[in-house]
Image (cartoon, rainbow, N blue to C red; front, side):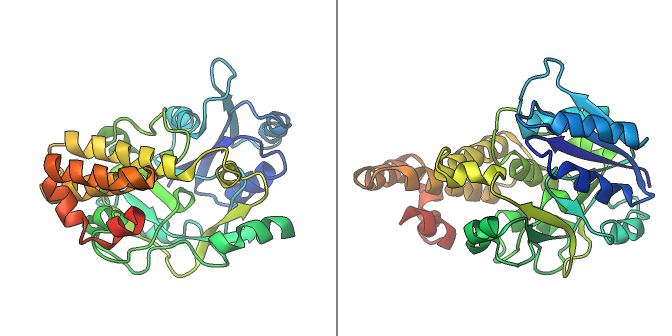
Length: 313
């Protein structure tokens, strides 16, 4: 295996060295691609030092040296990658020694196009733990049981009951089918949730297999300056970002001829539920009445769907 590990770097001078060193421990890692996204701290200086110290570490920036966000930054990393397999790692996270154990066995089968595993959590400070423990606790982010690849896409859509989650840090993808089947790669206009949107489409077009699900293969590093802090501090309304995410998924599904009608209705229902949840109380029922007329099958089925009602009321 020749794996390219792509690390978008923004405001991570304290953590990126650990991320890089955690990837360098694997002989299968052919290269580590750092894409620095105009960090306000000294991350660029740290990245330059890492490229001087390690032959397998490569550094890139956007042509205009500007800040473009995680989506375009990962896309640039993909453009520069030369490995047969692609893995991702956020600059404040890190891999564990078992990161590619399952992948080495599973990718011997050419039909396996991607493998996912479980993500652990580490709090870099007591303040970060106090702030984010209610969100992450000490739990694994994982898929609860092994599923057939065809069940991964509907599972992420909550169409088959409790499925769980997997993180992009714990995903390894065979390069060729991803570039051939997934266009575009990361959506460049989504500032948040672009990785979630990417995983939805990826699991539709590629056969993704479960790796190690009962123990962490990578760790989410939680600190006060995580991207999620912006959402938590209400600089960005999380409800609005969810509406934008589901609008993006809905637009894709309605225009993808191979998506079954049942799935299209479910995705539209999820988009409607988030959209309605944002409306002031006096507008909610007006919107429901409107969609009963214009989109009756979706709303009627949605009213009997627990995910819809959760965000509606």
